[in-house]
Length: 170
Figure: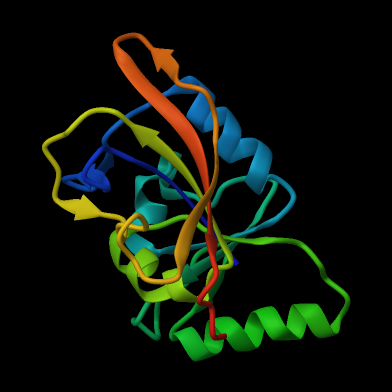
């Protein structure tokens, strides 16, 4: 699995259920990586998408503890075990699409150590936030493997970073 997120300098990702930043090149990178692949998210993240609907051009898997929850156009799983069993069933059928973890805070926290790679847009700004991505700079096993040159969007400086989980056990 691959985690993908945009974070501020404190690894913040959101405030009041909304993204902190809308950087065109970051959105383009997200789309390029995830289109044609599988995305995994929590129910609250899905509800932030346009119309609260799954994203087109991707298989959407929604994690929800509510056994009655269903979403047209998405697969709903109710536990991490169910998620991993579903992905394994796809692999057994020869499906080799990449699986991207796309949020929110709890889903990232729960699944980050199952990820091999994290694609992180780091924004050089400290935002007012209430949701965070795990700090990979201080997390054991995670190593920064690559970083773009600094880019700017209006007055925000940002870099695209690739982290690798060298301590993955699963």
